[in-house]
Image 1 (tube, each protein chain N blue to C red):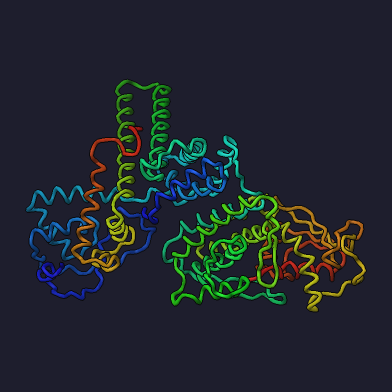
Image 2 (cartoon, rainbow over the protein chains, first blue to last red):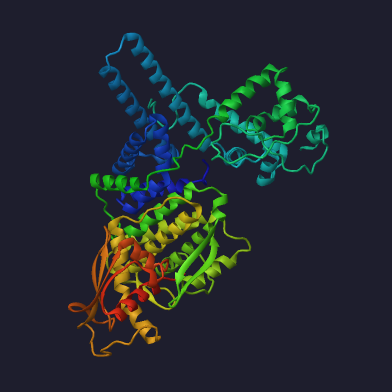
Length: 196
Length: 412
């Protein structure tokens, strides 16, 4: 997660460069977001090949229609993540539905399979919301979670690293997780109109 | 502040040693063994409710002391509200994983970008001579994304051929990236971009690298990745706008200069060579560049050979030409046929007696055949010229001179 804060200026500039048809900008866009896009698609689809193909679709869409992104609506990263989520869920529904209609299965099994599909879609939506929350939460909270979770620092070390009191470190960790836990609440991931 | 909390801490010691978080199963740990948890104290701490509540986040993340964890867990048995929140926060920890793929196929970048450009051709395309640098920097960056914090300090030995013998310099993975950042900076300076060295008066690849290394009291860390990557993106962006003509803009390397388009090929080559150094040090697989990029890099080396031959001859390191000063510029002269096998290969006629002469099949006196990657290892100074696996036919002195000249293309 937290690499470094991407200023909105970078987002606007990137959009302008893409609109201008700058191949170098396309490469930079890929370098910045490919692992995010591929990772999200892989989480939804559970398949390397399908994730590759969604990655290609996402970048093609952004490259062909850079104006579809509105910097005033939020960071480019969230928009790309939402687009990825939408395309991946679309792909998941299409393949699973095709498998359902192609297979000669009873209605009970079909209902079970459909339920399983919805579970997958829900899980993917929760994960997408979680990703969005982590990247839009205040930087101090994200930095604390980053240290405690990814760097395995305890809260005292986290406090030292961040130059805050131990009380404050505990508060940030708790608040950060509280925010993140809302990803489980119903609703569609923000950033676009109900992709799933 | 934490005074109230410390007052209730059983140990009563504010200078606590770093506590060790409990092992947690939710993190993919790469098989690294965790230290043993500290022995739990015999009695659970007694902490007030608001302190216990404030610890829930740290507890869910296994980021508090064993004694505190124990106190929280005892409390959860008695307090429904805290138990609910604790469960919610633990579930939230499960959502905290990297969405990023760590093992993206490096070939995917090329395929995705090509497919994009097929659908909508670029109005400002990447110059063909900048494409190898763009691709190699992206490949190296993908490797860097995969390696852990500690691996940035893995020792790496930079090796090159100093004109007479193999030589080397010890550094770390982060030190190699600092080296690339410093030397790529030569191109940045030529393009009017910021110099990563600031206004340090260092010159040439080695001087700049040493200056960069010495400018900091601490050895370089993974923090060097961001400026290196930003600069490489800036170079690619800037050269895309310079158009064909500016390809002739000179990039000074201190004691020699290269036209911009050749400097970008040189930097692509160095990026690959050092990426291999790093991959070898951290034990990751790493392949050669795409064949068309490899071909351009080899072509640059072949074009640089006559000047290096002449320089070595002036320094008494190569046999004097049989027909000194008798080959005027632009005229055919004694030549060596360099045959490079493999997908990135091709054939080059290297004029032997003067950089100004033109290679000529009619004046061919020797023929050398090498595999493409082997030739690059030779030109990188990673294979001593005496040991290069080369098929040889003809004038032995000429062959020796060319192989030594190829190795002498290398530098720190």
